[in-house]
Image 1 (cartoon, rainbow, N blue to C red):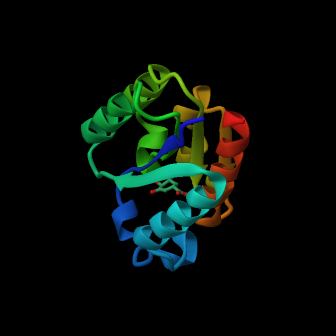
Image 2: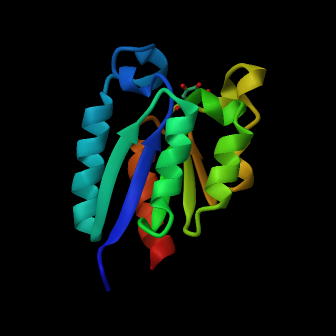
Length: 146
Ligand code: DHK
């Protein structure tokens, strides 16, 4: 079977990972996360690409580009989790598995973070495992793609 391509998409402010509120989001940078995911992806026989945008429309375009090109999407929509029907709709137009990741436990935080528009589409949800959550998501993605 051809190597599965997995898109890891990250929403607003995650470019500041490692600098922004490290007591919540940890000290690892998004580059560290991307490198760790690429390494694990190789072990699991998956080709992983990690991208980030601060712009809702750009994230939607990335999801559209994944249609017919990637086998799975792992997404941390960050603040758009709680606001974006448009990202939900874009993910609903993607045919493969979708895993939603949050670094923090969104249910332990402010009430406005408790609702996720994305969860209505996500096949799995990982929240509160720190940046390790991305690696857990990749392992689960490998299982889903069998
Ligand atoms: C990241 C953010 O930037 C917040 O807006 C979300 C999420 C939580 C996270 O835990 O990764 O509410």
